[in-house]
Length: 311
Ligand SMILES: O=P(O)(O)OC[C@H]1O[C@@H](O)[C@H](O)[C@@H](O)[C@@H]1O
Image 1 (cartoon, protein in one colour):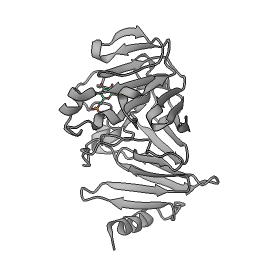
Image 2: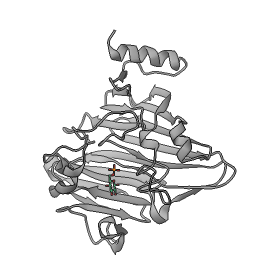
Image 3: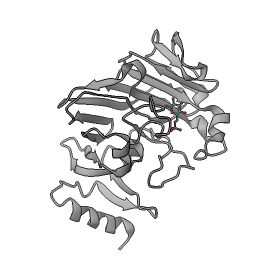
Image 4: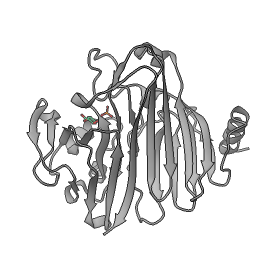
């Protein structure tokens, strides 16, 4: 029996009542013990890690190139975040507001999730519902009771919903983001529209505040948090003959980041070549003054839909 068969058997015995779309889904496990779900349906291929509900690959069949970028040097280890794809930042974005010893971008991206359901949709899409497990590490960092559920629908478009329910008796504040690494032809040859006239904090200038004029283009390290913006954003990539369209709901912040060579080469999980040029992060977020307050018993949903248009 190969690793994927035994992982599937293990899954079936754990989740006997789940509606598994067997011909679309394969469960695998690597040597480090991380679990993955590989999906192929008539619209797309995808792969996700259960640690961090982390989508690593999505390639709609109507486009020549995958949409998500993954670092070839990414490490796959329990408790370590994966470089590329869609890391999930929760329940804070960036550094923890009061305790710098806690991990950057929150603990969700290094916490295992359980499978709640996997099913085939009427339109041929595959929907995966995952819920974050409570671990000693997560409880140490957030003692409030909550439920965090991620719903990922894989098709010609990709829809992701992160739902946070406050199960405590007092309100709680949180930051969050889908920290998506997009696969681009060359970061210097793409532009981003949809943020014209939007206020931003520039992390490279100690959070200096400015207002965006026109489309974004990139010729050096770029790290800006665009605040109080709910608009759709497009990545125009003429060399790949496509636009990537990012439509969002429940998000008031968009973060745009490219490390450029020096920073990319300082990162242990990025290659010391030019592969950083093939990525651009456009993150659907709630951060800074757009933190979300959830009242007891209420649920907040952060949602995004990615689609690819030929140009
Ligand atoms: O290395 P990490 O923790 O995944 O963060 C990567 C980047 O994430 C971006 O969202 C931040 O704006 C950057 O400042 C940061 O460098």
